[in-house]
Image (cartoon, rainbow, N blue to C red; front, side, top):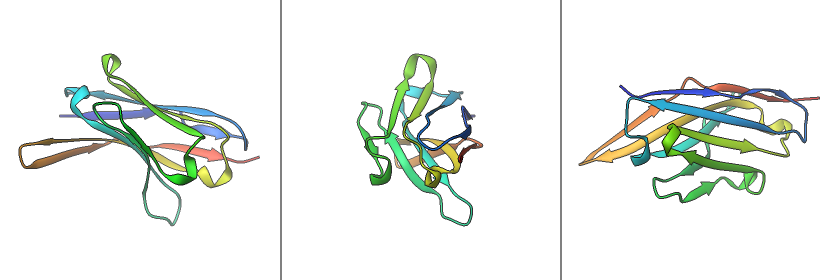
Length: 119
């Protein structure tokens, strides 16, 4: 059973920074594409950034240049460094791990961590 546990959320002022972490257990971490999603109250969950097993990254336009996703396969952890935070970044942030074996896609979610950007 794959388990993902996020940490690092909190309250930060506009312009501040936070670093989210997501630790995985129960799987060969290096084979997975890892993603960060977020969901604000009353809105749909949206993809923030992802990183493939080969290290290729992708970001939604609104966070480009401010957020950086990275992974440490030795520590089974994916990170999201968030700089220049804005109130509109306020949301619950979730990590997801996804892999394909044969014809089946497997994906797992963490429980989420709250990020609040407010003065």
